[in-house]
Length: 156
Image 1 (cartoon, rainbow, N blue to C red):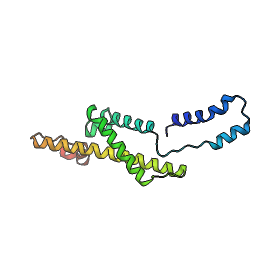
Image 2: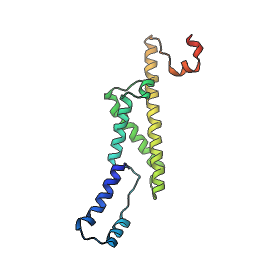
Image 3: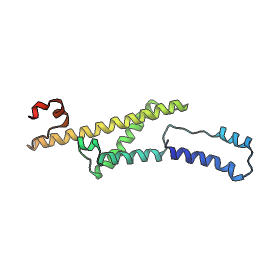
Image 4: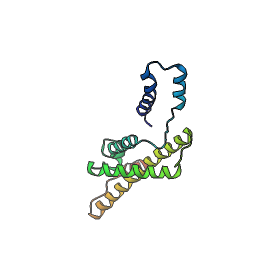
């Protein structure tokens, strides 16, 4: 859950007690004990933020784009939604019920790792497909950064 969402949730939970203006410390303590939040599953707002960040990463000026190629905006949005949905489903399948905050954190970490892994798999497969198309059309493949670093004498 994002910090601003947590702050909003805390403010909303505290609003009824402070709105009365005459709540005692005991009543405020009871309200605080009655408040709970769940870190897993993430809210739709958080999931949408993940998708927006993925779109920026896929089409922006990032190291990932420099290495594997940028994804056109028309393709980035559906790809980002697919990546996020698959990662969420995978994390939910493994950590479907988060009975405690610690379990929720573990599920959120798993979700984050799944998003990252699926993003990398997507750009790698897209890059490999583009190279295969280029080879089939008779274009010379561009040297990858990895091969130049692994064998610097080959470039001489």
